[in-house]
Length: 202
Image 1 (cartoon, rainbow, N blue to C red):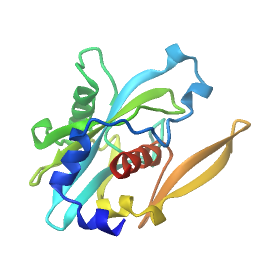
Image 2 (image 1 turned 135 degrees about the vertical axis):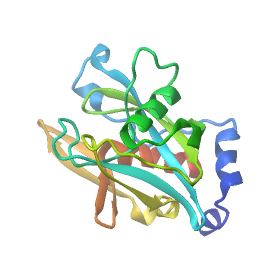
Image 3 (image 1 turned 180 degrees about the vertical axis):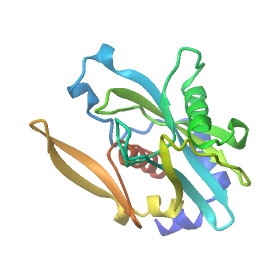
Image 4 (image 1 turned 90 degrees about the vertical axis):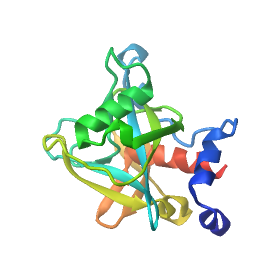
């Protein structure tokens, strides 16, 4: 892992997406256990990789406490697909612009990761995008309480990965978690992070 971290740069990141290879996902979600297939709706999120002088970071949002789904939780910007969206990338960039004001022109899409089915009934496609500062953000205060960035190296250190379980509606559910400072990243967001980690390191 030390060699991987020392070699971490833009060329390396691009090479992981340019290579023609298939990586099995670590987590796929279990939303299909609670809903029929035709009730699961398409959605997409942006995994923003920010190019800071001190190294890459990952940008997250913290959802407001009054929302119906995932209130107060840490997530990537994104949301459900609309009929006019031409692709998962289109959905992710549109929703990101609406939620945090990050312009699509500031994001270079590198590729997508494996879909993740959430317990709330969404089949989410994670879209990885490279974001180069400077950029301006304008948060949708109804949906987003704050944004923050986590060093990319934190993801690449397997010592920061947790796998826990909880009893939900009579079923034992396993989930990943990344405690970072005062933030607890878990559930679908952590599952997608694990898939990103596997994609980068396999």
